Image (cartoon, rainbow, N blue to C red; front, side, top):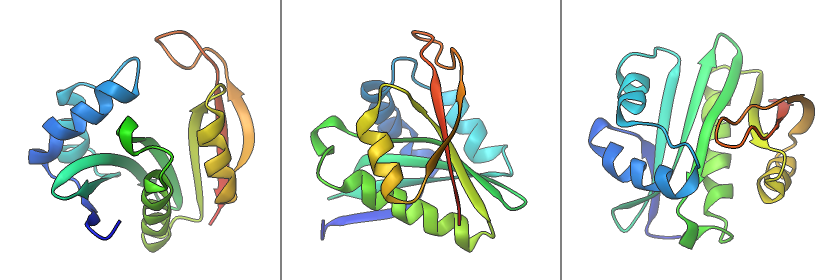
Length: 148
């Protein structure tokens, strides 16, 4: 991971981020959604993970007063299972703390056990279910959260 960096996302990263998005989600966000998040949403901050100058992952964070919400996190499939997601999540969690968040939450597919297991390693616990949350297949989302 020595040639890997995590930094704040810029507009010029969107094309590469959308490639990560397209292979990670059944209903990927559009370019306009990312543009809005970066340029219009005062609560949003997004980060990219680069390896040798190529975006291999990203994570979005909203911080509203003292609550943080992970909007999305994704790593290119060929880099999954190699602790890149863990490193990115840890970095973003620390950013939430630095921005004054007292708790962090996220939604994750009930079928995404690997992601749930990773979040549990950071102290997140199940807090509820959002029925039919995902529009591609109406799968439920597990809400997870942690006090920071």
